[in-house]
Amino acid sequence: MTKYRAEEYYNYQPVKERLYNKAIAGEQFEDILSEILDEKNLRMAYRENKTNKGSKTRGSDQYTIEDVKCTSLREYLDWMLYWYLDYQPKAVRRSYLPKPNGDKRPLGIPCIRDRLIQQAMLQILEPILEAKMDKHSFGFRKGKCVQDAIEHIRNLVRHGNYFVVDFDIKKCFDTIPHNHLIDILWKNGIRDKQFLAILKRMLKAPILENGKLTPATQGTPQGGIISPILANIYLNELDKWVSSQYETNPSLRKRGREWFRRFRKTNLKKGILIRYADDFVILTDTEEDAIAWYHATQQWIKKTLKLEINLEKSRIVDLRKQKLTYLGYTIKGNRLGATIQEKSVKGLSHKQFRYTSSGLSDKLIEKVVRTIKIILRLLKNECNPAREMRLVARLNSTILGIHNFAQYATNCATTLWKIYLRTRLLWYKTKYRKRDATTYYTDTFCKLYPDCKEREPVFSIRKVTIFPIWKVQYQQYPFKYKDYLAQPQFQSENAVLLEITKLLQYPVPHQSMEYNDLRISKYSAQRGTDYVTGFPLPAYDVHCHHIIPRKRGGLDVFNNLVDVSSQTHYLIHSTTPCIPHYYTDVMLKKLNKLRIKVGNSRILHSVS
Image (cartoon, rainbow, N blue to C red):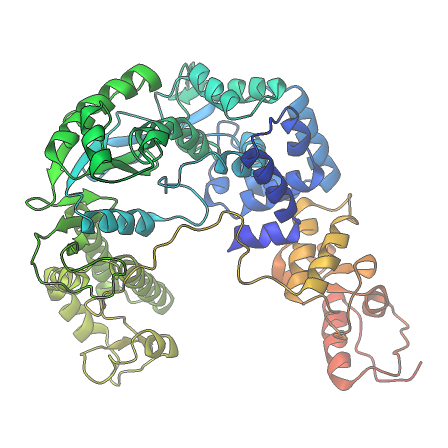
């Protein structure tokens, strides 16, 4: 949501459409750097970074986004331009993320300056490279998610593609060759040599670990903003190769009995690849094709992409006999004649129809059980009311999150009931130690679980209803290929957007980056009106007022700023104000509140 809002405010949609359409037409991009260094793009990079949790993590220089917020707009733009002209990346701080199996996943945390530069690059690269991406790639792409990939696999299984080749690439992000990646970007139309040189220096930034610098000879470090899209375009070569074998092969357009005989005489293999980042599977309808894909893909990835397949984790799965575990779900295909629960599938006769069952993976179930047990133990023994309320909110958000993820699995109700049974002892102890004497039903609970109020044994803690973990119902996921350029559904009014576009042309250069960014957010939140009078506020007359002045400790934060007209701003600070005749009691009340905060006295209603 925040990303789409930023695109609205900074009028990014026309830029995105222009770059995307040029890439679709096959045009070359020889001056990307000028697009990246555009003032609106650099300001949008700041906004995107400050909403990212990673921006609060310190890099090798120990700075975070909080240090950039107090920088003036002019200083920020000058710094960004200077860094690009003589770009020398700082070291990437190495950190490790623990895995459930005891291993550690290496992360590379760039300094905040490099994060801002990478974000500015990403905003221009994304529409260009999206035009080149295969439709079966679902990871780290706008409008695509895990459920899209799972539902597409289920659709293919329904058509009889029971054999799945499940691959695992060894340390994909850490072993991508830099020169080969640059060559692929060049082949996809990125022909700006200065930009490619900057990108290559960025990829070769040294790694700081335990006080020692190690040169980076390969890989795009996980933790970098630009890493996912670079890995996606690199693995897109794999998508195109698999697709060329069957799905998009021009010689196989006409289908029929004679075509099938000719196809079987070639070295081509029937199969469709589904990829989410570096996790991918290939589905086919025969065991012979599955074995051929298993060996051919290993060789092609090693020879062409210079990557290695993890043979211990790669396997061939017959979904009629085994379950496929993929992206937190399990999938199994039933044989012909099994009980059909999904009767609404269109375009399939009864003979063609296969029923697929799905559930949650064992690893995800263990993680959910472990998380709920930790929260319940803390909640059971907590005595502080404020901390108790935070734990209740955390418990409810965890339950709601697993409901939203599990509701698209056919076996969701059974799976969540098992999770409840594994944690019920803690549920009982928490319930009888912390529950309210009278159960309260919050509006949120009644909206999410309308039929649960009378029939299920729910309880409340401090007047907040605890969501029932077992209460979930299967939902058919509405899978469809989404348009990258589709507009979001929550756009602001056109008149307000037009004024925001004008407001961007009149920044306050000596004020901080945060002030200039919140000035726009406040204008949108107030729907383009004066905070005091409610009258329409044109862009040229916007004054962003600090409710608590800086000299009294006021900060550049959202709740301490309001957008007012120049006349209202004068009335707030004036010691001898003269109130216009059109001021109502409501307007005067708002004005007096602002005057008191700045140290002025209340004023009575008088006619100017």
